[in-house]
Length: 126
Image (tube, rainbow, N blue to C red; front, side, top):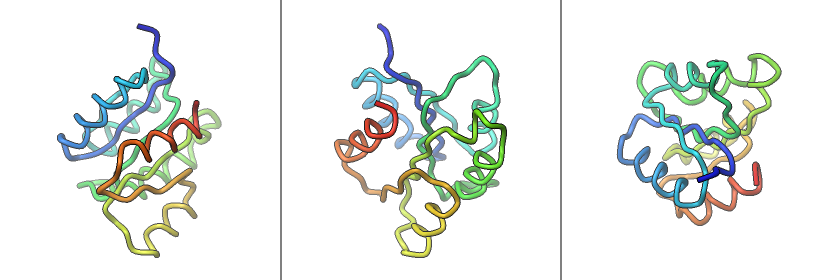
């Protein structure tokens, strides 16, 4: 099977990762999973891995999604341009503003409808 694009899912909740993996794979995307920010960043900076989009949780242990986003946006030219969709339960207006002001391409609240998330993915990477 030829995949459309590669999507890195960074979320500490296995159930969310698994559902997104399955759903995105059904749509022809190649999902890669990371259970925390450090692993996600390692994938992004691995020269063997090409990532077209990141779906990033905010509330994670050790390094939260805002910190991961900041590292992405302040990294090398290739990685810093990768679209990032924040997928989180942090629904306060200040959280949304913080995510978007730090460079998130979009901000989606949990619980979410996959169809809505898919439209955002398609708008960002086709």
